[in-house]
Image (cartoon, helix red, strand yellow):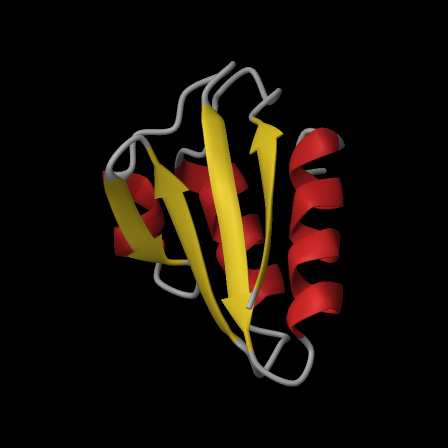
Length: 86
């Protein structure tokens, strides 16, 4: 398992379009990926799950993955969040 924390910088947080882009990118990896905010975790490949985290701007999230491409998956998603998810 590989994980990294990142601060959500996007003005809208992980809501609507940013969450959809995040989930789409997560779906490109074979590893199981989870996103955790505070004490709540969600499948990073589930739009409903990601939205329920209510990760607003300046929230800290933990992205973790387990599988053959876990490091690439986590690093790509962390960079995406840092770049304000497009």
